[in-house]
View (cartoon, rainbow, N blue to C red):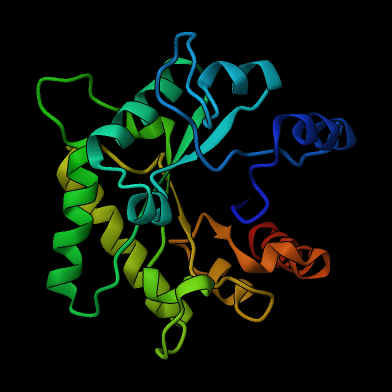
Length: 228
C-alpha cells in the first residue's frame, strides 16, 4: 500500500521523516524520479542517485498527472522504469483512463502497458520486479466527476482486466506482479476493496493527508490481509 499525496517530501524533509520511521515497517516512497541513472545536472528533478543516497527503494512512475500536465510519454516512462530497475529501486507503474466503455478503456490501457512493457528491440522489463497501480482518472479525488465510486466487485473486475492486458502485452506470467488500486480509496471503502482477491494494495491520495484517515485505511488492510 502506498500513499501518493504525501509520498515525495524534499530531500531534507525526507531524511527527517526516514529518521523518525527508522525501525518501523513504514517506508518513504517517491512520487517521481528523473530517468538518467548517471550523474549530471537536472534542475528541478530528483535523480536516481539522489534516491540512492537517501536510501529510497521505491518510486512511482508515470502517474496520470505527470502524463497530463508534464507531457510524459511512454518512452520517458519506460526510461524511468528501466533506470529504477537497473539501480535497485522498485518502480510503481501507474496506468489509468477516463473511459466508461470497456472497449475504449482497454484500448487506452493496452497502449499504456504496451508502450512501456511490450516494447521490441529494447531491454524487456521483468514484470515480477515491478508493481502496477491502476487509477481510473474519473475516480481520483482531485478529478472526481459525478459518477459513483466503484464497488468492490467493480474494482475486482477492473484489476482482473488489467492483469489480463498485462499478460497479453508483456507475454509474461503476472502472478508475481502486485496490482494496486487508486481511486478515492478512503476509510469507508478500503475494507471492501482490500477484501477482493485481485487487490494487492492501494495508491492512496487525498485520504492520506489526514493521519486518522490513513490509520483507518491501514487497519482495513491489516484486517483484510491478516484474515482477522
